[in-house]
Length: 260
Length: 260
Image (cartoon, rainbow over all chains, first blue to last red):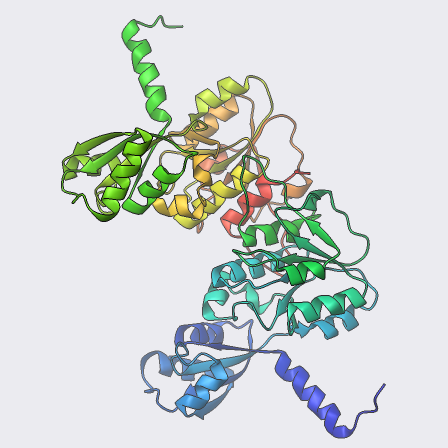
């Protein structure tokens, strides 16, 4: 184990803090977040160029009433904060999500205890991602493993499709799904890829110990590379010659599998 | 029992035949249906006003190749056939759906055998309706009870959201959900309304005999009138303070409940 200097310790503390932030953008989504008393809002970012009228005044008033720090930026800087200059409308906000963590943090927190995760391989449709978040949050899974690369960004569309459950969902981040699956394998977790071609049924599967179920891209399914990192392929048995299910439906069947 | 004259017999035969037809409309949906060899297409309807070029020639060529009868109509008559003059684009087609039947036919066919239905109370979003059809078709339910009144029409949007499974789904029609539930009650079927406020869990429920699960409107849930016609209320237990699930997700959890 490395001994940490005071600087590294501070850096890690800062990194952990920033990892717990979700930056949302757009005038209406930010106003709605400010109006939601259940959300912990860290900072409001506004472009200098916004005219302080209409919904912008509403946003400023709500932030002031809640004691949220307001920072003003050049439009270009704001677009780097929102990471979506085309759609931020000059407004962004950092939310503190208590339940958002990295895979390392999650594994450390669980210690040896068994868990069930749903993991995503290139889910690109915001509507699907939002519905998956909602179902996984409601179901009896311990978290949704979301690679920072490859999936749709957590945009206002995703927040809307999640009906706001994104803010309380147990989201677990990894850099790429490949790195995440390798870390899970090292931790002794059984990784199962869902595939309509698999012979074994999800419903007949009862894992020993911890398990992660991997859902693939809407069109292509799970990639070969990801398959090769999994221990098992599972399918959902379908009647009437139906060839596939919507990925959000599959996520819900997994999330609620074994619920009572 | 009434004795039937030859005329009534013929009328009933005709009625049964027309009940098995689904009229679809729009240039692209009709062309795609004509290209799908699994579909049984009865008639093609075209507006006189269509210019016989581009996709219209493709449609005519496909219909002729398959030996589908083509009828030409005044634009106004066509809009009565399609029941959607605004979106039919001068094109409609009657499909014969072998698996589409009335509730009376379904009950008679089942005799005394147990079955499981999913029934819909005012599902108005075409995207949801299509996803419900897809999941119920794939799951282990015996049919989807669809009232002719109150739900979204089986439009191209619904067909698309069902990814074409609408054509092979076991659809069962009743006039209104109220009349359907009364017929089910008389047949000794246990009718369960899904409600997020119910104490009993779907997952702990094992019905004796036949059962119908009623799903309510996206915003309002199941209506009071429909609740009063049900024997039982069931909920899907949710974690993390999530208050509701998408209705298509709920339909899938029901359709696959008990699958192995």
